[in-house]
Image (tube, rainbow, N blue to C red; front, side, top):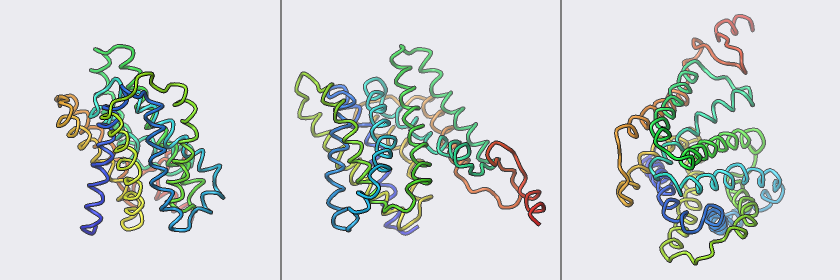
Length: 309
């Protein structure tokens, strides 16, 4: 990977990790729906001029239905869920749970798109979700029902990301990536606007909260999308998605540095187990020798080759 791409990757992970810090600061004052509605609206304002400049607006209009659904599943719903969780959970904790996205993505790809899930990936799924259990067990045992609900919201949000990744692969492969980014943020804005208006805070949010929302929209969403799609173009989607490995590291670090959140041994252990599972799940399988899951049936690639012959 070129130096510029490596810098983009680290910067992208730092921005996405910082989003949990910003949500933790602003969500208690604005509430989940108003916070995220403003976030996606700002991101749309950042992205639409870029789409117009590249001449990709026609692609947005031609695919508005799919992009609206993508905005709903990839932004509006998971952002709202993470915003709700931010009112209860430490930002670093939420960022670690966000690392389960590739696990959900691989599982849904096997069940929905009938993608092959290799034995190493199956092991990774087990390890990754064991890490989630390790993270959640201690917290839930001491938590209120609201804390348990916030943890469930984080996991539901990552499930949405897994669905949206496979939806994109199945229905939006030929659409310009920047058009997908802009169109989905417009769709998310339209979806969240009514709920945001109904739950707008009675007391005016502080200047600190507004500055945080602006930073969340411009940098952690708008600029992050530009970096992400530039990485896809220059380094490929697999390397672009490797930012997922670094998000919890930055999320935990930002929370400890700016909010004084404690980094405990169970949190570190859970993070390492989750990331190990993600690594196993996303690692390429050895060709022609590893059992795979095709749909729901385990087959051996060597037997499959002989049958084909």
